[in-house]
Image (cartoon, rainbow over the protein chains, first blue to last red):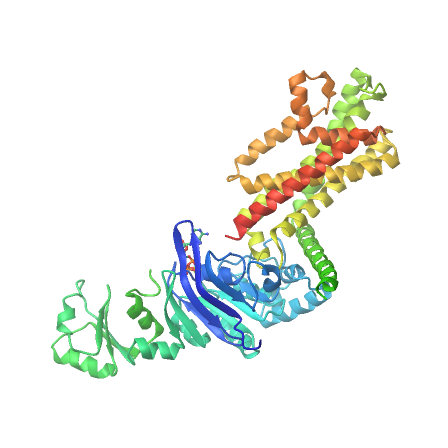
Length: 310
Length: 272
Ligand SMILES: Nc1ncnc2c1ncn2[C@@H]1O[C@H](COP(=O)(O)OP(=O)(O)OP(=O)(O)O)[C@@H](O)[C@H]1O
Ligand SMILES: [Mg+2]
């Protein structure tokens, strides 16, 4: 069955006691796709990824991975997956190379092949110079890259990346993106979670937006923006606390106005025209910014909350 | 068709499983090479030797020879030495199966990475036990060489006793892991140490159980270290009997139950 999706979930549920972390989601991921789960803290992204990775049995619904049953065929499926969990789980007692070669043995990969692949993979993630170092002193970005390299040692068909770049500086993030992009070009299927819209836009062909255990929207990044937002957004800041009073004063400008604690967003097809309209009403914002609409706006519109809350 | 394919598939599966178990043991061997931990490992050898010398040989000089339940006469050192071997097999296995195992599972989160591979919890437990047994057998071999040198047993019986000490390590390793999956805090390990030391003192180690009050004797006889001491003593003193087989069977059952509990609990803890 060449057309069978690599991941096929229907009404998938995960409960922890009384609490429902994943609340009946439907997902299909096809071979060669780069698929994203976008959502804020606690949305249920990791819980979903762990079920897909066959380390967490679903509480309800149906789940097939690579056409197999994750509960019954767990070891067989896991042998064909590469997993980069949210928390790095490197082996602190081993060297960088050993972290890959020892891990390879868990998949039954012969020692010699493991050594060859470790050398290749360390080069791929630009860690070859640290090959014989201990893991502990590596920077966060290096550990993340090592975790990704380790996940590739069994030449997986499907790679699961739970927040691959959270906590990395921009340079390290771009390096990871670039490597993931190359994997995609090789035809590896990627599934990743993120709270960064730019990451989703960069890497994903298709994504779902998750909130409180549910899928609230699905599509390509462009489709989602077109469907749930306007082409441009006007960001206004005023030097005062109570921004609510502007709701009335801005009424009629653009298609929709969203008041956030620190700024006001005006959704409009033409941001500059909207800015001019604000000016014409004798309102004097302390800062005015016109930008293209992003997934963040989609998320805000769908859930009434910003994606990265701090 | 199905039946003809079932057997090769089963064999392939078992082989895969054995390879993965070996990979976990290999991981521990790789880790021990890097850390200063091998010093700790080596220090484990001296404890039974110190006891043997101070109590077996030292106190033995005062006690003189010893008449066993079946009427045979042995030196006090030959009576105490197999008990030290059994206790050292227990301590070696427990050290890995309690403190280290708990740290790897709850603190280092080592097994979280392992369960994302084809490894299953019982394979992880067996692999860890493999390393605990390698560590334990190093002590046992060294100690048995010493016993043969001191004339406390013969070389042939020493080989048999080595296998018995592996079984002892297997049983206590299984029990230790099962306990480790049940305890919640580091403090609980203090209680385990106390229990272990109590077993060490009262499992017919320094005095025959026949000399204990009847109630205590019954309690002692159901504990695993007593069974281990008796099995190894039967071997090193060359007095094998049906009773010895009973002791061995007891230890096998304990090992299997311990492992089964440990694997089940690991599954609950790691695959939430
Ligand atoms: N083992 C667990 N036991 C109890 N509750 C859990 C467990 N794992 C997750 N949860 C809860 O389930 C919810 C979803 O968690 P999950 O880790 O899937 O979210 P997430 O989308 O990955 O969030 P984040 O962006 O913070 O990683 C959270 O409210 C979390 O507290
Ligand atoms: Mg998460």
